[in-house]
Image (cartoon, rainbow, N blue to C red; front, top):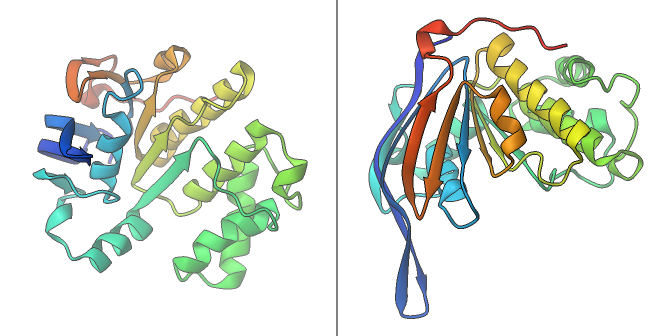
Length: 242
């Protein structure tokens, strides 16, 4: 699976109406990403990074263009089918963690597996395994109020990984974290690509993360300015995370 094309998007454009004016945020963007690789999309606020990730993942329909995700034309599907595609194949990690205040770490992960129709006993087993993988085996019963920012983000990563997603989208996953926690998070995303074979797409303006990328794309003003492979797809190798 590693090195295989996961997403191929052509001619993505999107504009928002602000008052009587239209503001273009994506301007005829071509984008692709590969299994087993971390693709870093960088750029200043307002460059179109988050809109791009929303278009690629089925969260926001572009005005123009096509997204072929896992060999399927995403935006030709009906809305319910797009929702199911996201549920079945995509994992999401956001800067705000998006955890339920009343649920403990294990329950946070079990909740998403419940939507995926995983049996309760299997969901518990997968939740514990995912939380153990991200180093939270001693925090299984803690609610978000008892967790640090870095631990909350690791719960969010465990929740995403528990689905075994082929596509993993992370939108500013380290912006609310200190440098040590941020490094732990990006190492886990790196592992998701190398050990799970996911196509990992990270939107960030944090330059510290570039060291963990297989590919770095820079955006500005709704366009891709540069696209640099650190590791070509055919050269993907499994790299253990310390």
